[in-house]
Length: 98
Image (cartoon, rainbow, N blue to C red; front, top):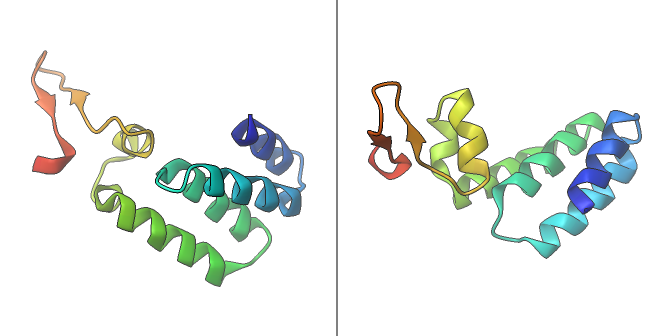
């Protein structure tokens, strides 16, 4: 619920409220990458670049594969699903082997 609320706040131009909402989400899910990335985006929107960089670094500590992944994979990695099906069929991709 907090994630959706923060997204709506940010989409309607209230990035300051979104920062607060995403901060609560990060506190509720401290080991999740997605909330950190959302918070970083809201922080950029309010021009708090130093804090945004700090949150991005925290996300990379949790999941360093974010830096090396393709855009389509970033969503899966953010949400704890590091495997994807390849175009060749059932052969899987593991972020741990990349």
